[in-house]
Length: 336
Image (cartoon, rainbow, N blue to C red):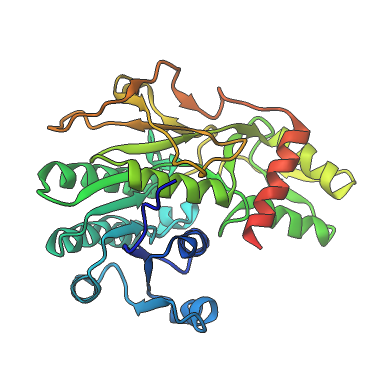
């Protein structure tokens, strides 16, 4: 495979998060210059303090002046925008803060890219942005639309987004939380045994983001094609892992929670096409990449139409406990 990152400068907003760190570890294999842009100076020092190959910048995406100065000084070719407020139930109580970071912050990132003539910028979105019912999802849906519209009006920078589900063992993931509770002999709380979630690994997330960045023509929302699982299957798989029965409490829906998640809505199907992962950027359980192209565009996408159903976690269920257990173990391994 040709090295698409060779001699490129890549800036990652929110680079101290679990995804940002994993992207950086992957990019270090590709002979590129890496800039971490994060407001968390403690995590910067902890994770990258002894790595002279990485440029560390302390800054908040809410602060356009700092973003603009950073872009002008370091002149990134690619920007991967991962910084966000992400806790669904918390954002229901602090919608203004969510808007300031996830929407205004994304506007700031996009404008800094335009100002500094960045080649490509990709927004890391979420399945919560598809048919959103909560503040977090609505903020990410808006950010997706902002990036699509900014691309339409851009003379140089290519903007796109990537949307995916729950990453096993990432910050806020419920699986390591449950395993910690179970190791302490405590019960776990579950919405419902029929509730479903998309699950994939940190490696899959990195492969999806980097493949989407390189493949982007402009304005797309990329979506990896992978399995979903109901809580009954997840609990039984974890029971096999710890080799004992699991006690749980059914607590119902939390603020802003969905019973089933969506990745591609019915209304998006006419605009959904088949993209592809970069060579060497696939795994056994995540090998197909789709994209939703803009409804208004002046660009041409030479892609094959997707002719499948809407992508809903209640439809694409996998109930194979052994398969899920391997996926969970791989996800936990990626996080360590």
